[in-house]
Image 1 (spheres, helix red, strand yellow):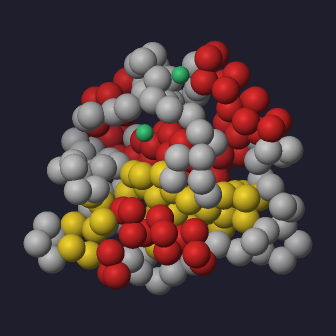
Image 2 (cartoon, rainbow, N blue to C red):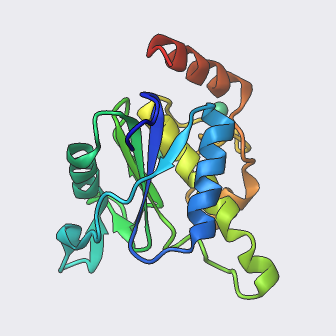
Length: 185
Ligand SMILES: [Zn+2]
Ligand SMILES: [Zn+2]
């Protein structure tokens, strides 16, 4: 990232992903967090996280690897993957984050659910951006929010993702601003 500022969020697409998705994520990070982004592919694949029994990818292992690969100048690192993610207690996850930490990951794998026509497919970048902002906010120590319109609302289904807005509620916004101030960014 060379000359990138110390508060840059490194957005790391892994594998074959549409560039529009990465662009949508960068846009959401810049708008919601008011932080600069840099696209930085940190690895070629997440095959190391594949679980042969579940035939899915263990997201916690991806987070550990991301944190170890992130350059010092990256404030946070947000990876985008195309594969199906899980954590042991859940069937699948849209993403995972290190709470109050540095790394988070989002999968586009299940976010295209119900998108068949071209018009519907245009919804995908917005869904990915919402879930990416959600995971990134966890790295700023934000927890889940009861407000169904808030980015920090926990989504059990794709309907929940579509129903929530692309912003933080006033309460979560205050928490994020305090955390950004506290970390001096
Ligand atoms: Zn969450
Ligand atoms: Zn909220």
